[in-house]
Length: 360
Image (cartoon, rainbow, N blue to C red; front, side):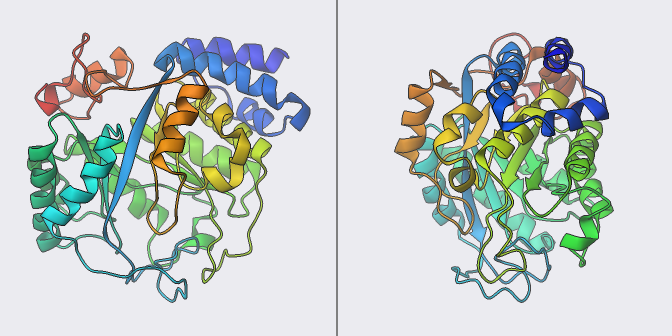
């Protein structure tokens, strides 16, 4: 297929496809899905080999959120049956993180519900970062606390946060259909604040919320322009008690096409297979490892994931290997640019470039 040959050539050079080419990937048939995966897999292996980075979520504060994001069980007005609790203490969070690190997780993602942190919340998270890093030398910390106010990104960076996650989720054109209590521009601003403070930006999307192919391409190209180091790809989990509870719009083949499109548009970026992979990809999960070079280990915020042991078995059986803390995740040219800018964690590694901002 000429399209795939063109996309592979561009991806191996680190170039992005045109918008029309990205749309064409999503329009391929189920009969062609293995060809699409094989082509995008060449690009993945060019920049990341057969390594899989493991990430682990720690939910610091659950429920009680004033925002109305239609996909979220923690939203204002949600009737979902979830655990609701206020902030974990630093030692509790560190103990939770230890389970992920013991399973091979290289990055711990500290997540808290809410519109955004207060300055007191930043103090709490700073103490939690210190507690985790004291016990686990070399582990990366990514904070995900919502919209940031002036100066908070700098304080988190000074506390030892390596990265900050804030997803765009969907296209700017459809954002108002999903959330009304904050704007798409608010999300973009928070990602930019994290980058300006010297943290590695992590920003991605949620597929399966009734969007068109054009919306998926729009948000991925917006992410490409924003230039995060990692792009999580979530597949909507239609949770009872949320407005999108009945939205089952995905097939395993469509999920693979979406992941392939993201890889082609962001060839040298950490593409993370995130929430919803188990229920939407199902038995085709191993094929997704040929597209994404990063996954979450175990459970998510308010939903259960595949067991950590099953994740590790899947990685090994598919012929991949878990990335160690002494290996740099990002290609050298991205890690070196981040280091030269005084920020952005290249995900460590002693091989040329290293990670000056993280002190390695």
